[in-house]
Length: 274
Length: 279
Image (cartoon, rainbow over all chains, first blue to last red; front, side, top):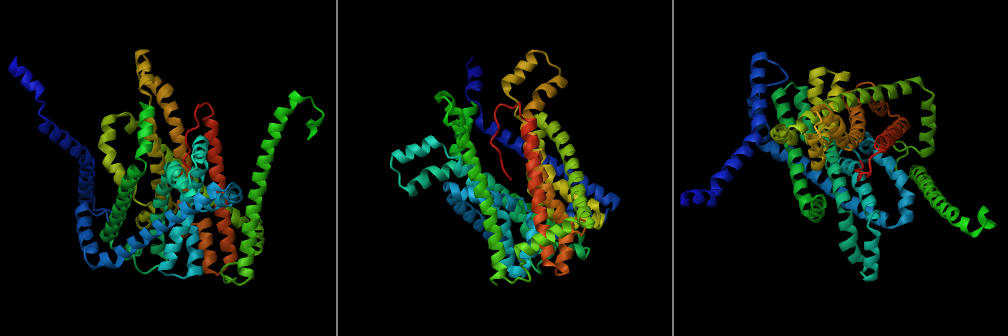
């Protein structure tokens, strides 16, 4: 009896936690390892020229991107991307809040903004390139003008849809406009704003790559196209992998920020669902 | 208006309606004013010499060029080419995404096993594949399709994945205890649950597919509107460039409107119009 209860009462937390950890690691790495193995075997058997084996790509990755190239090509690209995203988000939220709060302004500008959002952002590149010149400023302007629309329009929509009871409550409690903005309008709009920011990130990354690929002589995008034109296949693949890693990094950062900003919102959703 | 002599009781609904029409009128009027203001600013910027008129033609010049192009058969062929690669890419991506998303979404083991792979592949910007597409297919339609399909696949796939997994637990247990077969569970339970998600994904994918179709035409020089923009740019015909940019915007707007309408129609039975994510 004592033996029996002792096995039940002490549930051996550590081994089970380890088992759970091991299981999730196996789940996370299982398929990628299988796929990479298939790729490696296939590329060495069939000698596919455009699909070098993962090992070759990994070596090329180390050779190409670890070293001076990281500071000359990758960091400037990432810097432009980061500045562009920050500018697009800040400008989008600021302008969106003002436009969302002022009704006539919103009705005045909404149709024209809908049109601008519908324009595929890459077509702006040639225009911006000729107006600004093919330099770093051009890439920034391209990223901002292309990526601002989802943030701007989602902010307008989120600010507009603030619960009217809450707005009136805030008014009767005599909140100052800045307090109202900080404690009511921006939090109420934040789920919409974050949706816009997510779209903004992927558009900004696309625009960074294209503007470097075709209107530049340095940067990550330029390097990838350079490798392709010179048939440096493994190096080209390593560039694609690097872009993938940047995309994953952006997604992780975004997920982290979103969880912090929208913690209250996800809490409410869970309570509603339960 | 006409309700002045009408009995008092009848006045309230017309008045409400007239207030609503007044509001829509105001909205339409302000919207038109906004467009007019935008065109005026556009007209004045090059006229006053704030920007170089050689690279930034006036609104009237651009609109004149646009109306000239509308009578040109080659322009319509380019629109047709762009929309063809858009449509083919969108269909391939949707079919693949629905099949894979349903299978993976319904089997918890597969969902867990593929999660890390999906989370790595999804954020890869599809334009990063342009060099690979050029190597594999040369300057052909397939290269554009590869990029379009890769970009729009994830939009639909993720939505289907979530939608299929979102089946209400009570409804699922009810269906089971009523002895519904697997096939009829999928038709009567999973499909209606996943449909709103699928429609959202489809609308997002349609927009993304257009962006990528035009991008591919611009940079892989596949015939279509995108290449027409680049050719006009190389020839220094900036009015044509601006006119074509407007055309691409109108196409984007039309696609958005059409897919929103399809979404609303196919979900007219759905009780709650879900919080729309707008792209």
